[in-house]
Image (cartoon, rainbow, N blue to C red; front, top):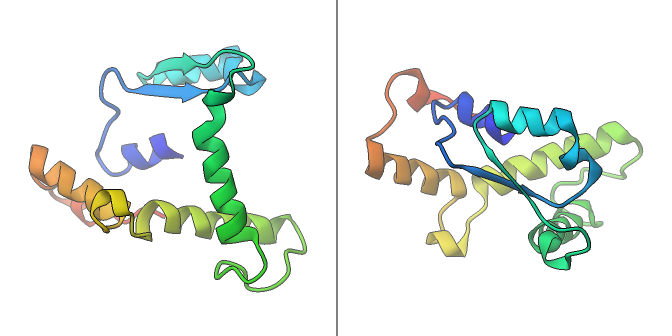
Length: 136
């Protein structure tokens, strides 16, 4: 998803970008490894049984459970009765988390605003269609 977004906003993967994952079977498969390489990423896989590999992911999962799935969440419009309900909730949460939430480490701006400011300061604002694209 992140690679797709970068490709569709004219922000290609830069040489040396690293994809880090744990040592789960889906991340050690030949097909996944080839896909990472085809996109120009360097693979970084943590060691088996190393609890520190998953700290960031586990923290994010905890946020997701508390902010999106928990009863009373603003992302829920009612009970989660089927897979479609969970998928819709998840996509809405991921969009908010990556584009709309204010982040204190970023000066209380959204990640999207911070990224736009970063690219504007390093390479100039994107021009043409790229400047007007909104990602879903």
